[in-house]
Length: 389
Image 1: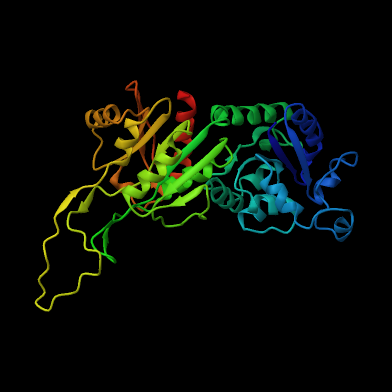
Image 2: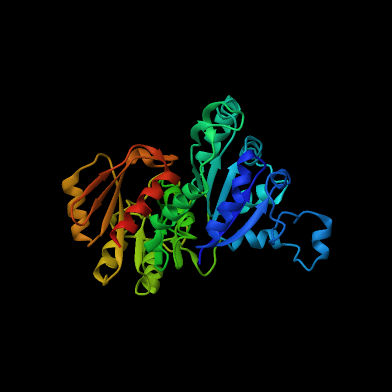
């Protein structure tokens, strides 16, 4: 059963949150987190909540001192209903002075945010700025409030969704990635090296941002995730599930170890295409005359191609970086490497936070997407993978 943190903040719409809680309880395991002001609008005294977790008395009532952190790592989704002007301002500014704001700061899973407030507050320039900050985060799903009658009696934007409508949004969220939930996924990303000598090597300019975003997005959406990565701008923690490699050969070895036990294999790595024929197992000394031996290059081992040779029932997803989009070339690559999906991005995506992709399926269906931030791009990719399972 999926686990949801229902975060309730102090707005008029909080009065509907008890109904929302009862509806969620029918399908999900729900933890209720109330802000101090939310208690003025709704009564949850008959159930256990985590609202008093920062109060001194809480720690003398058989609770673990890190229970608030454990709560953040033992959940699948945050539902923030309603999200008030004050709460939105806090989380957009990085403030975490109660459990409701701390959970947003510490969690690496998705948050469905349902703003509700007076129209003038919602159209306020500061709220708009904070909205831009939050919607730029891959974990935030922002639901524009409705237009309708407000608590003030006026009509305008800012009315909260009804509990039954929120339930539909929650259900649809889980359905979007529902087929991934029981899958074992193997992913590679980052740039590899081709050594010239002991200290010098050939590599490329990839930051690894796309792969990092994919890894983070998959953490709470699949049964098991193994990541094999080269150098990246932000290196993940190295452990048995996150494996760092240097070369194409090392990448292939690690991918093969986990390939047969994987349902989905995503190859997003920017691997070297060339390596030197005459590798020197020491530092090449600088010559006084300024002349150096010519470096002869040969083709590096093609990790994706080698994996395609041992493919059985896995869904295999490849990535292609191109100067311009050429559908015919993309189709050749897709067929030669027995891919189920090919994600094509242009060279402009290197070291950028933005990307404009096209996705080609083995049935030759082409999906084109507008330019967007890479953490939003990965959601489109995962949706398409979910569709073909």
